[in-house]
Length: 148
Image (cartoon, rainbow, N blue to C red; front, top):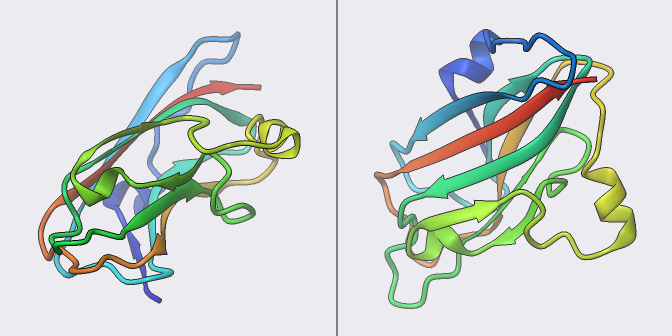
């Protein structure tokens, strides 16, 4: 298990929106330099106290080049690794997963509506290792946020 981070996550320089129900977007891209492994965490986006994620897109290239791709990704935060997307298989061939995908229980649906009371990061976690991990490719995370 390793932890990686985008420049946006490490700089904590995300734009904080104006409030009043105005939705704003924060986006980051992580470019692979080595194959991902099980339990790897990629810290993608900073989230400030007072913000709430109201939408999210995980856009990935083919990150598993094996004949039987097996990579599975989750998107969440430091408290809940799969808060926003649970069990995305899109990195097996490339594609897009959306906010709420794989969230199947009432408790998970409630947890997705988290108002952050302290700064955190939105992370992509490798829930299942790739069969043959790609050593190049990108993970893009686009979050739609509001204050309050």
